[in-house]
Amino acid sequence: MSVSKALKSSKLVSWKPTGRLQQTLAGCVERNGVGLHSGKVSSVRLWPELASRGRYFEFRCRSIPAAIEFAQISPLCTSLSKDGFRIRTVEHLLSALEASGVDNCRIEIEAFDDKEIDAEIPIFDGSAREWVEAVEEVGLAVATDLDGNCVEKMAPHVNEPVCAWRNDSFVVAFPSPAVQITYGINFPQAPVIGRQWFSTYPLDNLVYSMQIALSRTFCIYEEIEPMRNAGLIKGGSLKNAIVCSSSKGWLNPPLHFIDEPCRHKILDLIGDLSMVAQSGNQGLPVAHIVAYKGGHALHADFARRLIGMSGKSNMLTMVAEKLFF
Image 1 (tube, one colour):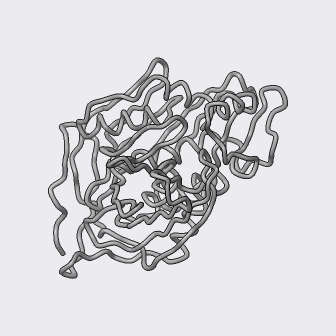
Image 2: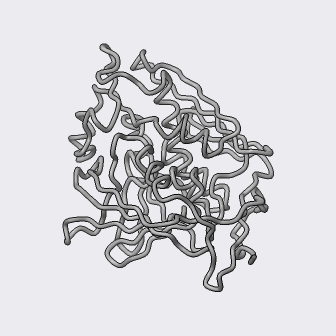
């Protein structure tokens, strides 16, 4: 068994062995679907990859690592960008891969417009269910390097409280022996949603697949038109999001869970924090993570802070995230 490559760190986190080996997919699996914002169809193929290669996207013969260094927080989603090429809405797929233990994976994107320099991951029903089922379809295998050696999986452990915030929104992590996530949301403009809290402990792949992965993205009906006028959610429909009217309540019930919106925020957080991963190791920090009224921009700010990166997302993105999740 070989050891992991040197990992970038900060005083806030320490990389420690998990007692498990890095994994990859046991075979290739493909899914096709429509992007939420572009409304365009793309094909995604998930391929096995060598140990220590991590998760990365391939698009137009370019490779874009699924790492926070390449994260570009777009309104209402997380994107990865490199050399002028961009992959949008990566959070649900990355959430499923991180939670399912797919540490090393080549994600091949095929957009059906040859002139496009960006592509979007299909939204499906607005949850991570399709990606979890894709992983289960082919199964997992221990990843090995070019010499046939397996590699021990490392995880980032939080050493001291870490916080990122904007106004009354925050993400904070406290040292903990296991991963726990507690999330709160508040939508006074939609009483049927209102204030919700959900906590999961411990967070493992079974808890994720049963309690988190099925949770769909959601929006407020009265706020859809401004988003469409801004050129967003072109592929949005009642089939890929749960929609709530301020006065009439849920327009396309039933919900999978009474607190499905809050659970979906945990799904997004896992996807965004998965980008802390390096060299096929765990991305989600071992900590008790508490978040309130967060969004992709704040999640990314928190991830950057964990590994000592600077820079914050613009306020326009933060405002947009209040409208659609």
